[in-house]
Amino acid sequence: MSAEYDVIVIGAGPVGENVADRAVQGGLTVALVESELVGGECSYWACMPSKALLRSGEAVRAAERLDGAKQAVSGSVDVAAVLRRRDSFTSRWDDSGQVEWVAGAGIELVRGHGVISGEREVTVRTAESGATADAPEAGTVLRARHAVVVATGSAALLPDIDGLAEASPWTNREATSTEVIPPRLAIVGGGVIASELATAFASLGSQVTVLARSGLLSGQEPFAGELVGDALRELGVDLRLDTSPASVERGDDGVVRITTDGGDTVEADEILVATGRVPRTSDLGLDSVGLEPGAWLDTDDTLLVLGADGSPLPGEWLYAVGDANHRALLTHQGKYQARAAGDAIAARANGTRLRDEPWGRHAATADHAAVPQVTFTDPPIASVGLTAAAAEKQGLSTRVVDFELGDIAGASLHADGYRGTARMVVDEDRGVLVGVTFAGPDVHELVHSATVAIVGEVPLERLWHAVPSYPTISEIWLRLLESYGRSNDRLA
Image (cartoon, rainbow, N blue to C red; front, top):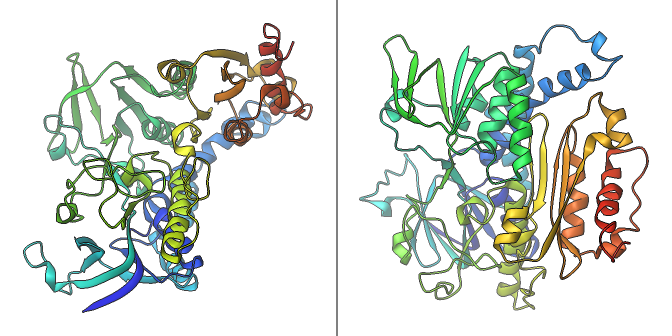
């Protein structure tokens, strides 16, 4: 069997859905290939269920931090209710609603495992078709007139630790879909996933031990990891920094025993590995077009895949969006790439102007220096752009300004004993922001204002006139700019 479309998208997560939708809006026909649930990792095993697991505990602690409200709080979170709420956000791992949306958007859904089998060609393998690695021709062949898009995402990295694989470790998938909260949970890793899930499971009653080789949130500003570490300890988490597992064994009694590189033993009922991600490209057929199976896919800013020579593949037909290209492993950034790629594909197919200049409609420029993210710990960390260290490494002439959020009237009203820090990193040569980080209760919604300032390259002289409402936490902008202006002619 075979069929022809203008565009074939492999992977029906939110990124694949978005690139397919944009291509359809551009007048093209699209086949969307998916071997698992339509909606992808974010909908069923990552962003949505993890935040649902986190939110109830966060809400209880927020009330406990406010006199007059804390007197109304008794007991702990209702674990069963939290899990039911989590299930509602995953639609109980039923993708029928997403399938309905795909059909309504005019996209053709093809179930099965998509493999690139030649230029502008994808073979879809299913159990029913009898296709195997030795007989790929048994699958359905789809041909693309214009483009094939890889939107296959990433999977959890399983580090090479003696006995780990045999111990049946959890990844984010098992953790966010669990029906039972383990009495003891060991987490290997200190990044965003590890920190968020440590917060969630401690809130749900697990005794959590974190083994973090490089500390917590090492890619962010140092105060972020310190604040989150203090909060985790307050939740009862056994935080072991600069520590790694040397070996892991699950005994006949089901208990996981971890021997650390320092010779200590940690016992747990489950072990969760959160040490990084790998691309889902190992069984994608990349070798058929001269690319390395299992590798991240390098792209230009229109998301065209680049070959070993740094140029797009001949014919400019293969694109990669989302985690698979390793530009920014965040759902919202992948969807941003998808919009740029879908519009670029349509422009090239229709012969209309390609606006691929920086900040043009068809260029994912923000991936380089304006990526926002929130780490949903308690307190959360919200950041965009460069850290102070990253800006210095790039050779920028910068000034760093810090301000304690607890000194702002809006923050002290928001929570008794509010603790938090804000930092802005200023490019002194241009007089614009290149990085902002907020760490503290309920700073999530501050990050978009910082994103607009960085993307828009708003001069600090103009940003000074963006007056924050009083008394809100957004007054932090005034305090940061005042602190900067006291020793700088721009705002003096």
